[in-house]
Length: 254
Image (cartoon, rainbow, N blue to C red; front, side, top):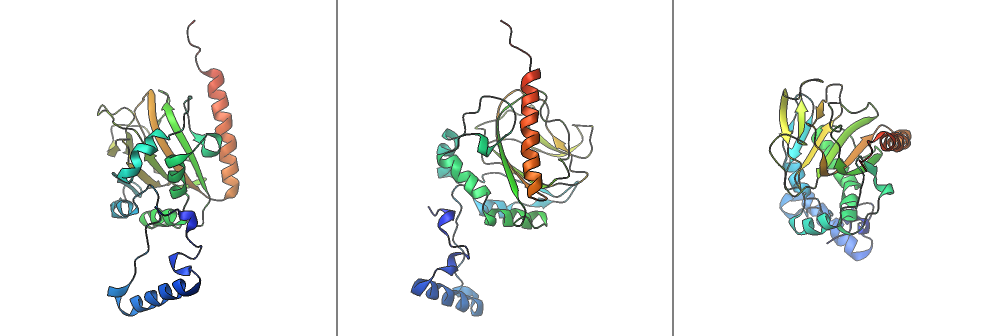
């Protein structure tokens, strides 16, 4: 399996020396004869980019897409085992939790320019030049999932779900909504099972949320932000929010 960090900055065709010359010559021949063109190699460790590319993009009520089976099957068992051992509810920046193994490989995929380019093409926007913030959640409270659009500092968000199974009662299943007040007025519903991805362009009408759920609900979120200052701001807000929620969380009975 190719580690994306081992691929030269200019891509697979930037290799120096005779091997690089052969690759560039092959690329030139491919432009003259498409049958000879060498397709770029798959540099993803865990994510199946072809599955992402194949997902249809909806435009109403805002640009979004959902795809299932997006993780390479042989990587899933280790990915589930390596999920961070988080004990508290809420989203945590990846710098604040221990990551290793297959889970670290997933983060490498999410942070790669190739992944941002693919998602951006599907949502009709440039994401490669934007800073990202990745957060991870393992536990949900009943108060999570309220209807919202995301803040204006975000331009796009993508969720990778990592739960082995999920019920069909509606609890904890993200809904693409038409308005800011009615959970029953929705376009589609996303089951947060392993390998499911949901991505959307943030707009003033990008309403989404899920019915209350309490318990384990594994998800990795990558957000593309307007600029680097928004990354630091989001980190500060996240820490303050978790601190306040810990203070006001009901104490267990003795």
